[in-house]
Amino acid sequence: MHRRRIVRCCVTVAALCGAGPGPTLASAQSSPDAIGGLFKPLPNSAACTPGGNAAKPFLLPPGFKQTVTVSEPAFPDLPDMTTENEFGPAAGRVIFRTHELTSNAAVSTTDRTTGATTILAQRADWERFDGIAWTPWKTILAAEEVVLAGFPDPSVPEATAGLVYEIDPGTGNAVARPAIGSRSHEGLRFDADGNLYGISENSPPTGGYLYKFVPDAKGDLSSGRLFALKITVPDGDRTGKAVWVPLSRKNVKADSDAEATAAGATGYARPEDVETGTSTGNVFDGRNVLYVAVTGEARILGIDLLGGKNQAFVFEYAKAGGNAPADFEFPDNVALDKDGNLFITEDPGTASTTGLGDDIWVAVPPRPQAGPHAPAREVIRFASLTDCNAEPTGVYFDRFGFPLIVHAQHRGGDGFDKEIEISKNVP
Image (tube, rainbow, N blue to C red):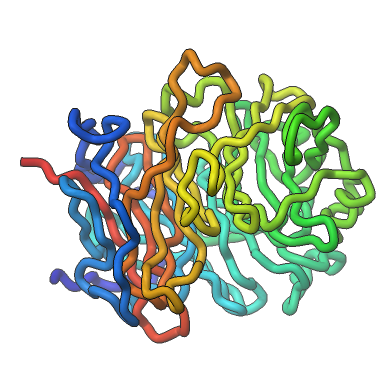
């Protein structure tokens, strides 16, 4: 295996702006004999063992291969979510990932052309970096998944929970963006109008909330209005017509969950990741849908953003025991491919007790004639971890399609974390 060279400096601006060719990516070609035109689904989860298959961590369907591209100690412990430089002539060249350390949380990078891996930014007061997103103006957002801050940021002393930081990808300089809200953050995604969507994972007693941040000036996250989602005309289990309720600009900087609770926002059990089609440019998602993984309810919600207005419509997109199998457990991270197939990773489930690894599923989009708020046509198993002590995290597609980037995040801090690229086998 080629050993990655560790570089102790920041990624250069040139690496993001076109110095040298970008990576060669395999095209995501459909297989005519596969369900949904994608692949032959795995019938069961992989039999797992502690540590699993180090060289091939995932069991995959025929026609796919995997490569471990980076692993500890080339980057810090607990790699979580992933993005790339998504725009410009060298789009897709540099991978950015968060590290969910209790303190000294970090963002690391890998240049896919040179193989160089580096720590872009790291601070002692940063806690449990999880969500990450490439902004339309070419910066990085990294978010803390913290319910109660253990190491408060001295620049935002009023914040009681996690914050979102905007990071320069060339220098690593970071600025807190408290207007987005202080809470336990995870997924972050923009819509086509530059509004930012996110969640709070846990805010007892009503559950976590779904949020929209509208900047006062497009491309400037230093000020703006935060909104929380509230169902107004229910047609099921917290689905139906909804509105985005405005929250206090001042108070959200201390505790956006308290403000959402006071505003009567609708709660869900552990929302975690969110996804829109803005990164992948897929055709199916032209109607501007936000997908939300609700981990504690074994379901994926679809939220029709209705053209960016303050109204929305919430519908059930995938759920265990409905259009998903009963062993569709703890959906966590989500990523759309360019055709609208939603790839879904499982949070730690029952692997350590059942001997079956955590999975990556695919929700196949409904046929167009099914209507704008139809559930996924089917939910099928794509991959399964062979390591009982790891979970798949940070699933991510760039706009070119495969490879799919995912981490095998190994619990226990034992140096076994890996980043894997899953790609099509091209004859």
